[in-house]
Length: 447
Image (cartoon, rainbow, N blue to C red; front, side, top):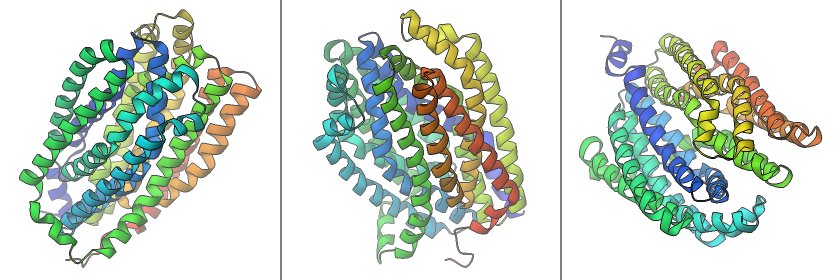
């Protein structure tokens, strides 16, 4: 049997994607459940959680350096049948993620208020966000460790296992929220999230060392694998920079909302982020599954199959995105009504959901094609595009349309859609050029 046949028999898009979809949905629900339950407690408290979590997205970019790189390298090493190298990368990723996770947690414990003030939070929203962030941010080392371990398990094709862990975490988190939020408000939501992650992390550690790796895997770090670390940084830094620039642009846009737009528009943006995450969740899961497949195929030097697989993945993701958007448009008022009974907020959300259809076509393309490019090791091009597009279209465009032309949140959403669609076209052109074929990470003669 050819390498292609072996890989496609062992792995296929939907067997990988549907557990990733459920796992990612449930992981997102850890934050959404907090927002949803707090929305019945206080709209401003719900917005504070969303604002706090955006700062978390920025600070945890450092985790993406190692998780993205390890995902690419492990899949390519396994595709090239280099099992020892894959294990060495896994050990290096765990140690690195834990080290930087502890540093980030310390930053949040000591400087959460200063971070929130920096993005424009003030008054009651600032107080709520600080109380939430000191707990959730202080326990981010658990998220870092979970991320590292989940990547290792998934890239060995065992996506169902991490899905089951996410199910358990979310059931526990929801139960804790229902008990603690009515009594403790934002602190209760934060405690529920932190404890859920602690339990999930413990379970993943047990699974890793019973089903995937031996506890002696860390011996592969002696002597220290500087070559592997260099390769990880070469892949991870530009990939993390692309994500960092995107999240930083979103944080600047949030500052524009906090400073220039009304409180109802701030609340509407918070609820729109919670609603629309389910539209692009399918693309996230298909993208991550495709990255695993592309990594294995490129590691085995099956470039033609990798080329076709990207387009298959993109077509499926677009179809699902279109169906999701259609459902969202039909049920737009009901979806907004799940979070609030404020008629102005519901009206804003309903209108934005119409604009969001265009945005999702671009975002779906980016999520899937960029994931395929990463699987192949092509990480610099998306970063270069992000530098131009995120800031010229998302940030400057949002300020221009929302503030200068007084279009409010509607203008901001138009700018976001323009950014996603422009970058989506650039990514498709890059894949078609076949330049990604030159970016294979693993050495053909590695041990």
